[in-house]
Amino acid sequence: MSASSGSGVSTELQVAAKVVELVRELAGRAAEAEVNVRHRALALTRFANSAIHQNVAEATTGVRLRLHLDGRTAAGSTTVTSVDGLRSLVERTLAAARVTPPDPGWAGLTLPAALHISAGHPGSGEHSGLAFGFDEATARATPAERAERVRAFVDAAGGLETAGYCRTEYVSAAFANTAGQAVEGRTAEAAMDGIARNNGADGVARLAAARLADLDGAALGARAAAKARAAAAPIELPPGEYEVVLEPTAVADLLQNFSVFGFNGKSYTEKQSFAELGKEQFDPSVTIVDDPLGSRGEPAPGLPFDDEGTPARSLVLVREGVTKAVTHDRTSAAEAGAESTGHAAATSRSWGAFPAHLRMEAGPPVTGTPGEPAAVVESARPFLAHMRRGLLVTDLWYTRVLDPKTLVVTGLTRNGVWLVEDGEITRPVGNLRFTQSYPQALGPGRVLGIGAESVLLPDSWGGAHYASPALHLASWNFTGNASG
Image (cartoon, rainbow, N blue to C red):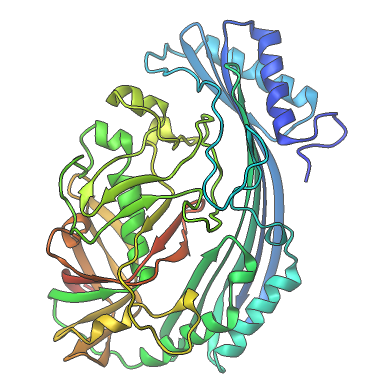
């Protein structure tokens, strides 16, 4: 898993150090530079019509250089990691910097700092992050191992048509800058997402994990099939405000939108976010943490540093209903008079830094469905007994933000909605369109219950993970059915 071959530059950290050396050689000591090197190996096993139809894998090493010289900033990238390729990258980036407009917002470089070591993740040195959330077996998973989980999913669906994927990903990364910061880390992740179809009704099951061994294809297939069978022959309901129970798969969409549009430090500084620090904006039962390192000791599929070399750490965004923090890179932190929270990314200067490993803390223990593995326990089910009339919602999709300041979102339900009356599921319901302020839905007094388990789910945007419990909410604004 080396960064290159035949060049004498082998590891990601060595590549980063070589680029720094070349910057000093070609631009002198006045230049400020930071280098990100990332080797990514992604393997995907896809299935449709209950059979594997695609098994693909790719491995690439990318080098990104950001350089600041004479008040001007430019960036460049390459996948050619030979010495000649790296020299060309530096030369091109220098040439771009000389003709780029001045950059008054440049916030400088990250100074040398050791990585944070969370409980359960022993470090191997001051600058090493090689032990963070990393499972060697997942990094080296074979097509046969992914196929085993696909077979188990298909078999457990009991003859229903199935489709989906099982993927594994390995990332080895390094960062170095001309201020002396040099860090490295690696991580591995596995995910499975599948549907079962029954006469036009779909049931879904998905799960992400730091270990492929934690993905139980049979449990996921059985869950998807049970939901598909229960969703057949849906009725239509009129629009209106309904009490709802959102399953973890639906809650993940709330966390994603909170992340990108709410806790984004750039949006906050520009007053385009709903976030008001120190204010009770959520129900007291709500606590939301960004946790790339797994502060509780469990592996987490995150790197221990960001794209500016700032060490990653656990950050409480909401504690018992009170908004406590937003996330920053160095640029937005300087504008806000704050410090970087370790959330810089390749696009954060343009789009803002946002948390990519959100976890909504689970509620008190409740009884799940007997016999189901903990990873896919139906933590929504216990709330149904307390509903006089409401809806159980599996999934939200095609969501679009109408007003970022209040985070009013419109979208559709998907993969199963059911009417609940007097504590019992009575009928499946056709998909509904909604328009709802997400923070308002979780506001003080509006959260009636939080599931006892936060389930780690993959993000369709890539690179982010959301640990979501089920939510029992007082109301949700449905504006029509899926066709209107």
